[in-house]
Length: 91
Image 1 (tube, rainbow, N blue to C red):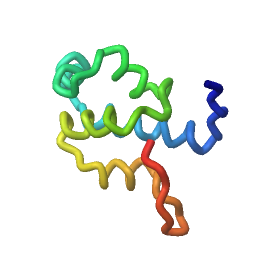
Image 2: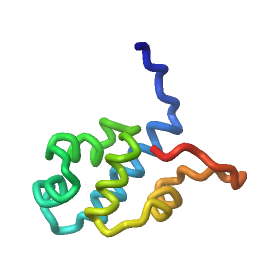
Image 3: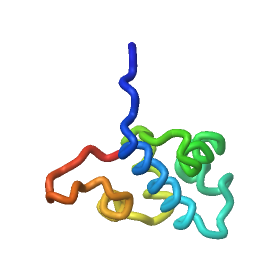
């Protein structure tokens, strides 16, 4: 399966998502949050650094739960909702 290249906007959204997750993690370790979310530390690291700009929905949901964030917050804060008020796909 060939994957279409990401747009600059998708990459920027992934970077914003990663920054938001890092900020929400605060002083807690990557090991702690990754374990709570059922992910590997390397997966969390890649998401936080933007190297995985479009993580799977259930991965984002698991991280949101582990960090005490709502998915609605993440969508708005990561800028996934277009300025025209339409719905965009969650990263």
